[in-house]
Image (cartoon, rainbow, N blue to C red):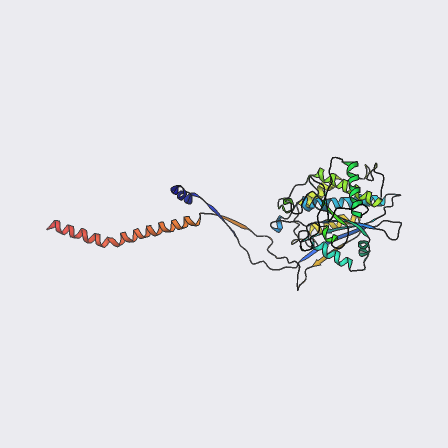
Length: 386
């Protein structure tokens, strides 16, 4: 009823959000990559594969960017795979046929800008990394592998005889030997050249004509979990299993093993679940917004130090934003306080204003009628006395 609606106006409350601070100002803006390599011995030139993951995170505010699965799980898996491969490469009598290039990058939530720029610079230079890239048969990106689901995202369905098909078969063989209950789902998606935004990390390599794929729990690039600010959980058992499968698949690929009945990673060469858990825990507790990452940030120092234990010639590269035409720009004021005030709706203020006006008007009329009342009383008294 109208009366009930009117009553609700007086009893209902609302909230007003207010923040105080100065206008954000531009600051020095940089993105970073950490690269390392593992070279096979015995031949002058070797084909190579690259293993890639981004280590920054997304948050509704920079200080809330502490996601675990995306992509803390991918980073933890890459570091653990580098540890396992270092043991495999140093094993007596073992001569893998491939070199391995490792790449950790920030800017994953900025359209993979650090990886994209790093790739373009390396392809246009004469460094050893350029030689490795020119000889790369396959690029494997890891993005969110710490929960249910094992999806291999590619730009097109792999054909027999291609590097993508060989890697997919190696991974499926690893699954059949280690955990047959897991289903490997191949998800082809063409790169949309008309869209400047990349859906998956491997697409920046695909457009440069490098065979690549991304392994992820997520079935689609726009899955809600990839943008979840409160992504703070990783199933360590799932992460261990997926890391084991990927490591075995890579080992089979670089060893060119044709025997489908044996594994390369034996009982003494398997992922360390405690190391995986500690790495994910550290990343999930550390702010990893690209805005906050600096050369001496704890994340940068930790990743560089860890990768240096297993890979050689680990290099940290800095990508600075252009001063004239920057592709990205960071600002200060990354942290501020929000105040929530419990307030009545605007209609309540209107009714309150009308009530105050009515009250003051009544007082005004009363005060204005006092002289007339005194005159009336005086005349009545005079009539009685006469």
